[in-house]
Length: 359
Image 1 (cartoon, rainbow, N blue to C red):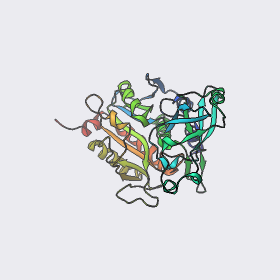
Image 2: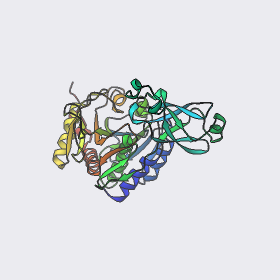
Image 3: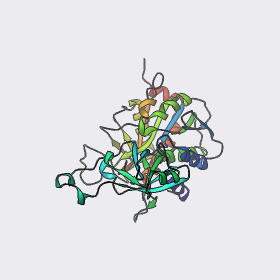
Image 4: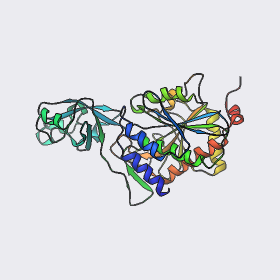
């Protein structure tokens, strides 16, 4: 991974962007897009980045959602604590003691997620997981009025605080929001590579909004793009940590780009799956096959657009998604970029005709 890509991924991950509040991510996307890319937005805020090739069709849509899991201010208590509404799926046990930033009208205010200390709980409650509804955010205020002076009010977004960094192994990158800033970075990298290559199609990198609360931006942006094919750019689940069985999660860091054969929202198009696997074999790109029993991607609404869109989910294996921080391998990101670029170079009208089912 080159230093320019590393800087782009750092800027994408460090920027705040929970569902419904993706403005800062759009700014980073525009900053790193290559020249000559036409951009537009749908009414919900998804950014559509068009790279014209030598043919108007097929249209290849590469969605990567801009939003990350986070929270929203629900109410402020009289004694100055913030009660919050989760935005996206959070596991209760990963929240306590974590640092967050509340983005109010006067800028970010840091806080800490807290609850009653275990020292004052009855013995039978100490071993139980504290539920989100019993947690709060301490922003260092002594009253509701003081919180209001900080510029905080109900509806303001709350973002995890976790700095991007290389680990001791410099190919392992740790950051917040890999889900799915890695997908956003991926489509930007692909568009840059395609600037130097011929492709008989039109490629659309799309930074979608509100994926974590129902794949909403994918549905609206699909109407803007009207794709013929969709390559979903996402994180994958890395199964190389203690306690995970092979039938629960497949793949490992450094093992290559993941090709998902099932998730709870979509079965990938078989013809497109075989096409992608054949391209990977010809280009000698490392791939891993994965299957998810739960969770879905932007592919869920896109593959049902109009009369149907051949869609596949390509993932970069990542540890600890939907927590404050995750870990991925730079080589897997590079493999994903290489694969998507190679597919885009080959996926012309003739290739699409062979992929589609015959009457």
